[in-house]
Image 1 (cartoon, rainbow, N blue to C red):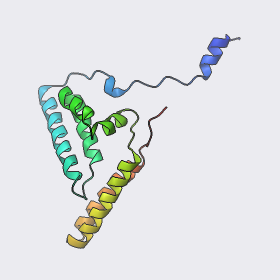
Image 2: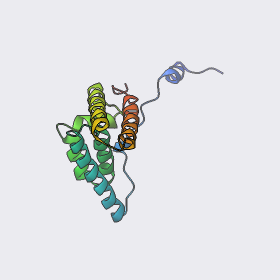
Image 3: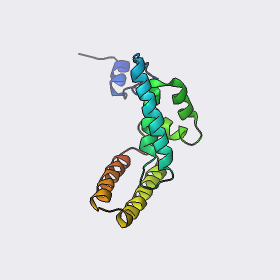
Image 4: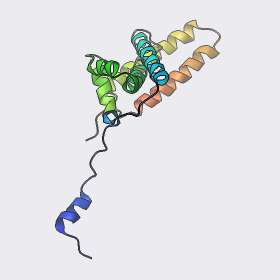
Length: 152
């Protein structure tokens, strides 16, 4: 069986990238679910902002959770988050390949390490800071496994 040159060449071409899930229309959610997701978005955003100032709380995962929930419940909040001068670039990069910049990884890791040291010194009983450190280590591992550059 012979194949034409264009068909043969096409078989070696990489597949086009899959469309961004954020660009796909979402199914209509019920009003209670939308309100629940809006609440998750606002709470996560608040926790992310607090996390920017409190060493034991990560910021990036909370902001990404807020962006996810807002994208499914509030186009206005989603647009605001994506156009925000500080958070917007991180959210857009996440939407385009799950990218987390190396600087964000280092900042988050150093803040969590600082928080871990403070908690080990101050907080008793010891199981409380150890539990928090285990959670922070899980978040840090997840964070460092994310790509640092968008896929080509």
